[in-house]
Image (tube, rainbow, N blue to C red; front, side, top):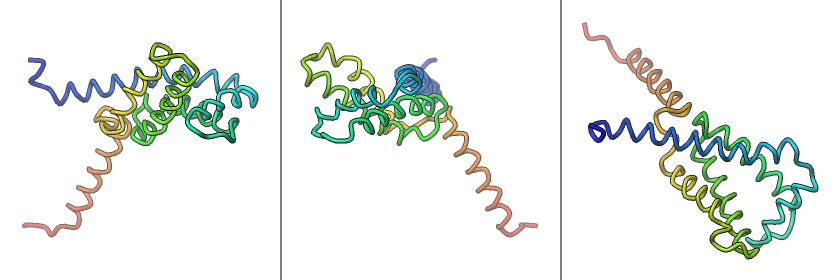
Length: 156
């Protein structure tokens, strides 16, 4: 019974994954945006040293904060999921590099690895049918069908 509607369940699973991890990453980004300041963002952005970037730490810290906050919102509603997931994947790669590079080991890098394990597949899965992207695609398809029907000759 469960496997009989596999595609429907796949879409539901993709939606749940997006919403749950969107809420989680949003909760990480919110305080960084609301309570963040340049000093905080410089400290946060200094993680870029672990991937070889040694300039603009304030910019990178702010960008990471914005990516987590707005990326979470976009995942929750299912809008621009693929590009958002690319940015969040990059964010998590830097977080993993920070944890591993600062001596945290695998246990210290576990949380960013888990996020990475979700955001990376979302690049390929996309938003799914139960999303704002899915809704907009269906509206676009319906409009194209109506437009094509209007252009086609009448068969009377």
